[in-house]
Length: 185
Image 1 (cartoon, rainbow, N blue to C red):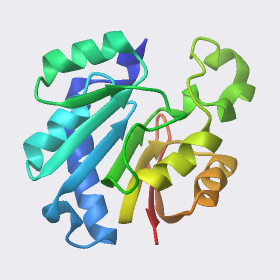
Image 2: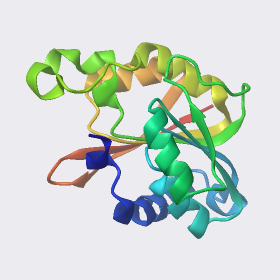
Image 3: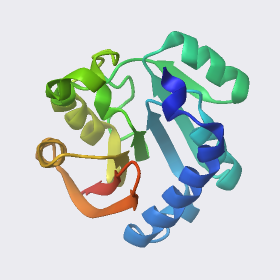
């Protein structure tokens, strides 16, 4: 099931886009490096791509699926991967310069009303609980980079945690995916 969101060919592409995008809004952060967290890291292809392109970043991954993390450790044995859901991020306050998510909102309670197409997605976290956790683990001027099709309600939930929407782009036509950069002041 998770393979639909975890294509290894996309890892380097998303990592490259991520590095270019964050440097536009927090100049110098991409080259400065720091600690980076991928929530819903799946098989860690994005983390591997990021580490290959920017070895000065120390990358961490978090996923709710033990089997998928086991596969991720095979792809990327030097990674720091954690088994957890989005209700509590097991990291210290202000730990990360950047947090990344891609296609995780289908697993949140905010999408339960979309019924049929989401029946097979397990409910693993609440965005209302995850958003303050994102804020907590980011260090100023930390950024949250989100590859999602976000509803207005979902953007408002994230912003209500203290994060501020900096930019929103539509990256793809099919499916339409929202690229949102948020940062904390």
